[in-house]
Image (cartoon, rainbow, N blue to C red):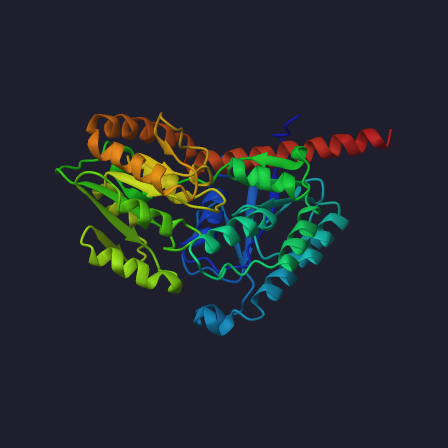
Length: 398
């Protein structure tokens, strides 16, 4: 039973600094969505270089003047400082009304300390469990004749599997992530099915309006690390087989092993490559289709952002992000399937009516994935699960 008469505190562990990008930005956006719930979020992190929502209390573990120095100069030891500060806050917390919400990079001992104090523990997954990610990425690198560059080791897999047993609840941002958690030994009852999302206000009024695009050439956009993990070798192979007038824009930093492959694609004349940009909304609005043949993800925010900005999406099951429905608002193909990917892209090049149909539908569907809704959903789920645990513990003592 949901307890709404009480105020709960969500102590959130973030090992990385906040600068308005990356997964710390997703974390901050989720916590901002707690604003109309009975949960007060506290974000404990090394430092914040940009303001957060008014409802989020920020606790910076690094002292001044380290908060002003380049991150590379203060990164070493910052996690230990965050863990120390977090431990002190746990020890002062009321287990009846406190949630410990952990993001990647948390020391096992800190989670154990929270549990030892009787505090409800939650883990946010930003990717699939390592035990599933490693073989998928190993196979992807082998397919293109490259040594694996993902840095996931067997020891890392074992370490994460042990960590995942510690939590009362684990947030899974897409269906493949859920499946990977179950394979890692997490009981389905301890998995919360959710998603990452988007914030329409970041993209201006065009974020929720039908985009204005014109011209005979269909413009495809890929955004993310230009890497094996994101399926770029498959994308570039498929691109050579696309039928019709089309252009492809790759946005992001290139994995070193793919530099020559990308350079050759750009030299062909129909592919351009742009560096990472925080103002991705401009590119969403100037393209026609988002293509994202990723091999391994958590719940890709770019898929939802693109859909919200009116782009039909071609992606893989891993990249669908609980948003993309095959044949409804986009197209889903298997990872690594270059022929299927080229056929999907060709179909949207040739059929403007289908593109428009998908664009209208995904723009509407993406409204369910705004961070205010997703944040509130997490907050209420955490409180409900905490209340359920207290009820079970009370029954056991009768």
